[in-house]
Length: 278
Image (cartoon, rainbow, N blue to C red):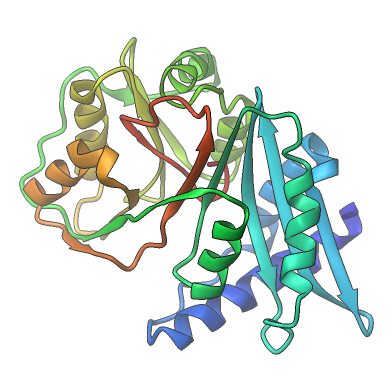
């Protein structure tokens, strides 16, 4: 992948996920600002050029795979193949290139879409699936806990320590990238943190213990007001988060794809991963 590929890759990802939503009978998610979305792709291209791959057919950018490595843990950030070109082997080939970037790592993470083809591909990588729930709705009667505040770049040291505790590797500058893209960092000093897009889309959330994680999640939900909250990737390990979502009156469903894990990725709880940064 080259820097010049970023605009076409952003567009390809939008087209692919809109196609998946339509095939599942869902209303397509509003399109992101291309300039904001490009920040993620540029960050990965700069930090992980060996994990960033694209494929072209007939002059069109047709597929993309983005993989990242953080302190010995590999993760697949994106895998998309243009509708009409899927199920022809191209996705498997570009995934193989990205998977080779995991050589020498001690752990692997993939957050899958619900697409059966994606699930089959990740199973073939030898990863273990963990089915997940998705919580959506307007939170009710969620009081913001004391001791949780908006964070700054100075709080990245805390996020690194907490990340190593729950997933064996820090996100590092990935959290700064999420903030550059408009996410708010919420911090419970000495306990945990979360990133929130808009007023209710929970991104990464990690804490030293479940009490800290519950407080940070409640703080994220309390920000929503009349807007909808979305909390994804709730595997059985994150029952603490399921309970908070139930208390807030959110609707739980199995619309979320599974989390795939392999090797040493820490206890992976209390933790809610991010689709982009794992």
